Length: 348
Image 1 (tube, rainbow, N blue to C red):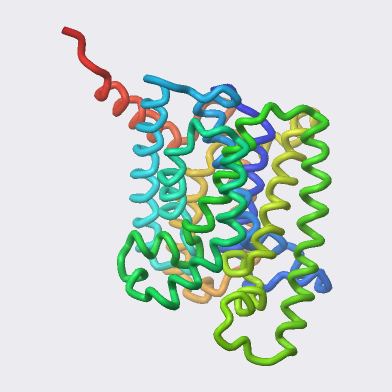
Image 2 (cartoon, one colour; image 1 turned 90 degrees about the vertical axis):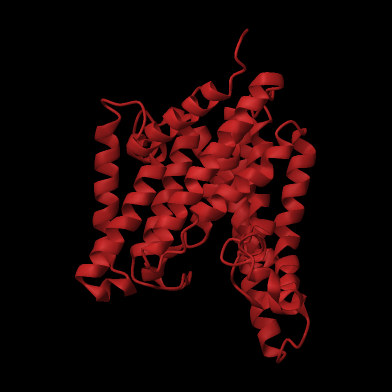
């Protein structure tokens, strides 16, 4: 698969946003508070990460001409192997007991749920993804309220549990998958970037205004819709979910447009984006060790977040002067290749 530098840069930006969310001092983003702007990516970074994952899945499975036959079978096996490894890593990181809401196990579920759609045309895939993003929060809220036993089952918890209910978040991946199946021209990327970022900002402002108005009307009662619209969380509020999605598409498009023209200025961001699995796992493990040394870090630390980002950018930039893949990325690739080789039909 040919690397698309803008996709690497977008993945790197998403990882940086998640590191800040996980490690920095806990502050809610407020456009009127300058110090909170470093948290503008809270939650939105994870959405960008998943949209980029969908786009990358499209590229790895044929791009604008999806694989079929034996190649499609190999693609599906590769996705299943990667999902199994990601789920195992996610369980390990969760067991460390940090405050981080580890996404890897849910991330694995999104990939598995997308498997039946690898050869579906981009229009229906994007349409289904949009429906899941917008209606998923309401369906998950209904299931949590009326089918509480669903959360006891691990598969049910992955499907409707927070903070990454697959019933909704698979939609973010599907939209990335659909976009990756379309031959996007420079003009298309420019339009998506401007419209996505602008629409995302407008929808966020609308969400805040509507949430405030509904809050003044008194208790939400039993209405799931009103309760959802009063929330500011993208896994609960469809408008905020749409805002995060629009911003993710806008950022991905902008970086695909700008990175090849940046004359290497975005190389550190691209390098981080090429080893996100390694850096994601490393930052959670390092955070667990840091909390063990100083429990007060559980509340977050700006210095810890900043130093982690500097190390990540420097290490990733240096790593790819000698190697093609990050450490965990290389091991995962070799596991996939060995599994595919063992699944090849034997002659004779």
